[in-house]
Length: 414
Ligand SMILES: Cc1cc2nc3c(=O)[nH]c(=O)nc-3n(C[C@H](O)[C@H](O)[C@H](O)COP(=O)(O)OP(=O)(O)OC[C@H]3O[C@@H](n4cnc5c(N)ncnc54)[C@H](O)[C@@H]3O)c2cc1C
Image (cartoon, rainbow, N blue to C red):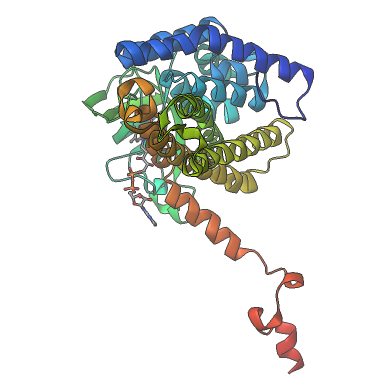
């Protein structure tokens, strides 16, 4: 039974039930098969993604408005779907990559761009990659070097990107280029482009081999004199930083929805803990094991409430992008750190069996580690949150004068 948020209306509850049924009937059996039969996870990712599309459960389809082929269930519907897919133990990386790749078009695209580019991605006919990271640019995304120069009605792109999920397979690269290095100090140096991958000059130089089951054509890409029409630019030259950071804020909510995998961990730990007898009792009766289970449960419930609160803010238009950036970073850090810790706690509850492929805990552990890196490393996001806390004015109602030191008014009086 889906654990609704108390403020959801009947339509949202019904949607949650439909998603739950779809996952139980279609995705969960695939997840089980994947673990038992050691099938090729890449093949499964594609077939599971296509199955989601057939049933109308592509996260972008659920999120997007009807005029673009979506079912307009908002960020709450989108988060419900992400959470439930996580529970199935099936990785639908092409869908998630495409929803993040298409994010900037959904947020800022013109009507023409939405009809031309967003609609086929929503319908699952086309795929999109997020194209930020470069050989010398990771967390410091403002340092993007790939250069774009205006030439008549086109922009000409030259440079490199790396770690691009789906890069060799997607139809569009949602790409950020440096269009004016002089303007970096005021963050007006980047511009966002939708780059169709059939344009001449794009070469896949390498496919990275990864440790998780997300090896989805993770590509190193070279762009050599790639000519992109002006109409593929999102907003105006210099708006790229705004486009990127806004899209990343939304992406972080999607990443935090990995909490769904924790439901799976809890069931595995519960089943083993109740069945496994050691020292004359089921291990679930030992305090140490209960503490581990409590850790998993507490973090799961807290993350769930927070992500649905954020989804609600977006749907009701109450999220101003600056405070939302802090909130979505908080959700991403807490959710992904918790997922990794939860996977370890579950693994220790399940003991040696936890280390077997067929429990699936290893896959969750690797995914948790990746999610702490992707979409901006957790450490960097913490810097952002910590700095902002120190920038706020001190609320003197709660602070003893000896702690805060003399104020300007005190000094004047002296
Ligand atoms: C499987 C996978 C898929 C990916 N998919 C994509 C994709 O589709 N598109 C895309 O654009 N990118 C993608 N990435 C790249 C990912 O977003 C980057 O790896 C991430 O942004 C971190 O950059 P980096 O790896 O260069 O780490 P770095 O920036 O080199 O950071 C390394 C370490 O240094 C720390 N650090 C750096 N600066 C500071 C500082 N000022 N203070 C404190 N600590 C600091 C970081 O926290 C981190 O721990 C993917 C990566 C992986 C592994």
